[in-house]
Structures are given as C-alpha cells and as structure tokens.
Length: 80
Picture 1 (cartoon, rainbow, N blue to C red):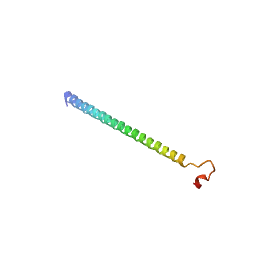
Picture 2: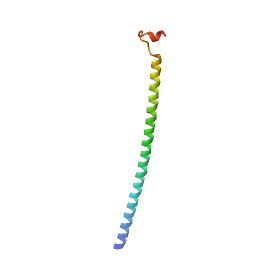
Picture 3: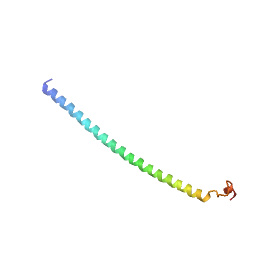
Picture 4: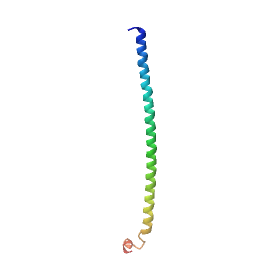
C-alpha cells in the first residue's frame, strides 16, 4: 500500500473516531439534561410531600386541641 493510501486510511479512522466522540458528548449532554429535569421533578414532589405532611400535622394539632382532655383528670375525656 502506498503512503498516501495509508495516510488517507488513517485520516478516515481519525475522522470516524472524532465523529464518535462528538456523538458521545451529545449523548452525555442529553443525558445530563434528563437528569437535571428528573432532579427538578423530585424536588417538586418533595416540596409537595412536605406541604401535605405540614397540612396533615396542622389538622392533627387542631383536632387534638379540640378534643384534648381537660385538666380534671386522665379519664375526663372518656366521660364526655
């Protein structure tokens, strides 16, 4: 094989390798974008769960204060 043929073959292999690297970088960028989107979803769900828990705790506290035992003794709530 002539030198020019070897150089051409080497250049084609390098071009193919560079193309693969560029494709891999694009895939990595797309993957990172997906990860960031999922992280935002998780944060949103976490905030929603926190709000629901806080609301539930507030409901429990309101009900506790409404139905709490009086100071006349431990059985006073059962006598009502």
